[in-house]
Amino acid sequence: MKRQRLLACAAVCLAAALNFAGSAPPENWLLVDRSEIEAARQKAEKYPWARAALDLFISLYGAFAGNVALMTLAYGGVYLAGGIAPKLLPHLQQGTFARTFAAKGRMRPVAAAMPVYVVTNRQAGLLGALLAASRLQ
Picture 1: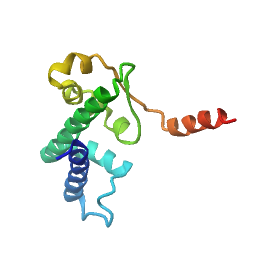
Picture 2: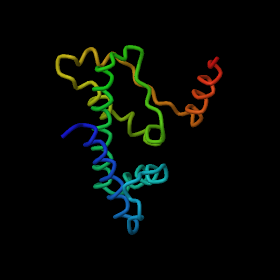
Picture 3: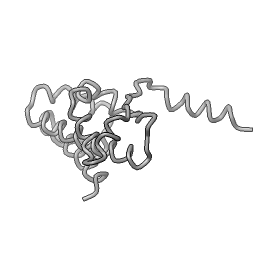
């Protein structure tokens, strides 16, 4: 199974586990939004199985990010942007993400040397679009 599919499955499992803990799943339970990510973070501290789902997600996220970093030779760093990474920042800093990011066999030294940054500015996408628009002729 491809890592992209595993990562998506982990996100779905995380949402399903959280809905099981709280209430009935919403109609569009396959769509994980920011409120569900925040709920994941909070419930992972209370329920061991939610923590296991979150750990699996972070492990797959790190492995996939490391693969992409090696494919693109991201020597300048990998920037994680969007709604998930900032919400899960404390969990990303606990080591599982970095360990799976760098676990690339003989390419481990290369992957481990690539810095990883989490973009916490919620307006980053708009600022990038504004910059690109300002460069149009």
